[in-house]
Amino acid sequence: MKAIATLWLCVAAFFGGDDEKKLAGTPAAGNPATTVKLKPAVQVRGVDVTVGELCEITPTDAAALAIAQIKIGNAPSAGHGRTVSRTEVLQSIAAAGVAVATFKVEGADETVVQAQMVDVSGQEMLDAATAALQATLAVEGGDVEYTAPERLRHVQAPPGRKSQELRARVQDGRTGPNSAIVQVEILVDGECWRKVPLTFRLQRYHRILKTTGALRAGMPLGPESVVVSREALDQASGLWLDRMEQVEGMLAARNLPAGSRITLGDIAPPAIVHKGDVVTVVLTKGRVKVTARAIANHDAPLGGRVLLTNPNTRATLTGVVQAPGLVVVPQ
Image 1: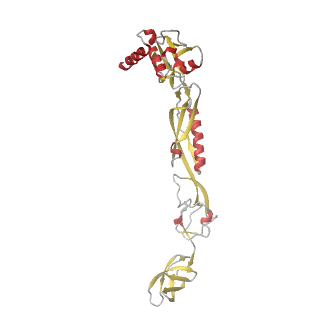
Image 2: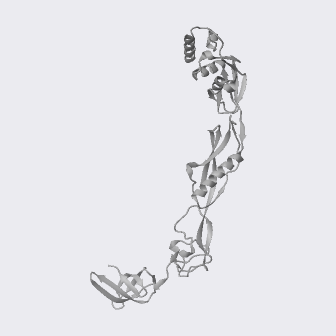
């Protein structure tokens, strides 16, 4: 109240007098060029309140248009109202830099302001969110199915003076392993009025290899025993095999039940040294190379380690299979 009184005193001092008509915009000499007539009640379409919505401004010219665009405050929320007095209108126009001598405020002592609202349906928001999610999933790639949220409610929003539209974006610009949150912005006259989050459930699928029937350890893997299957998985894993080329020429490393998802640990290359084979063993020490004969204690593939037994001394040592019948003992 003290600030308002001070403002009135400053205006009175500037125009040289205490006459109330001067404070209402009437100069000492001549008539103001613009008349601002306050309406008793109005409904506003935007997110704020302007003088042009509260008042009839005459004559219609550039000065009237400039005054009409002056903002007085925010629009009230849905179901509520606010009152704006003639004094508030005068102060807002003067605060915007319009000379008080060029206009006068008349009409109602105050106006009741209410916000005009329209329904934004849940389906409209869902359509916008779905389009944004699909675009993000297309960029991320992968085989993903989504489930839209249910029981969507409509939202009341101002229609805007010029436009009302929806803009949707996936939160953080990326989806999660099992869900995605899409923020739907309700734009009123180009400005964000409210954000509505919609959560989608995601199910990711991956192509993996599965056994078509039960396999014993050592059985060959191939099209006759393995199939490529589309499986629902929560997370991708580099251990699951997904191409037939990965098992060509390989054997089952252990017993595998029917329908088993095949991992790297489930496959093994075929053995080229078998249990009981007599192999040539090469030992190198500096410039000295020694060869001997030994017996393999188990099957081993190319590059695999094998335990050997000297048939004469029964001593054991471990080497690496380099070729059929050839084992090298590392230094």
